[in-house]
Image (cartoon, rainbow, N blue to C red):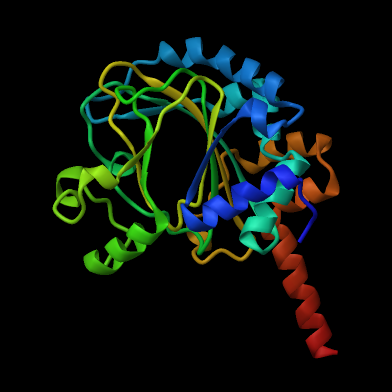
Length: 269
């Protein structure tokens, strides 16, 4: 595994025991954080004006064009310090699935990510959530159930990766066991969403704006569910400013195919 900073070890340890580590952009010390945060906050007025298509909609994403107009948002997730941290936690070469800019709407809709669930893409996962506005208990905070309790719940529920409404979840576990992640703009939540039940609580007073960064290993349990946040044409444009290591993390499917071909050739020889 690549070397990481001494300050990063508590992140890995807490993810293993708790499933979530809460910190801040300042504490992480990523050089490009100030630029990324500034650019992300420029998108907020644009996406805040978008009118939902229907009453069942609960989230609005920034468009590919908006992300490409601010490439620092996507590229922040490829900072080498972060990639080394992810690899150390996963124990395997990392695949970067991109950045998702979300506006979670202030309404009463309870579906999909607003219900309790565990992500299915890989055995271990690494998700980073950055709040772009202040988030209290009434504005859609990230909530989770710690690892040990999630394991017990999964067994009790015979869990098959469906979405569980909060009313049903409360018949199995007391809400006092829920952990709620509030914080000011710049708060960072790092979670292994493949091991814990989690949800975005329904915003009751204001919209929540956040950027999500998703990582798995390059050998995910369910590759079908591993989608990139940007189309390949946009990724190729951004690749002009990537190192070889960063390209391997983005174009991991191609890298894996090349490795498999080489292994097959060696076996044949």
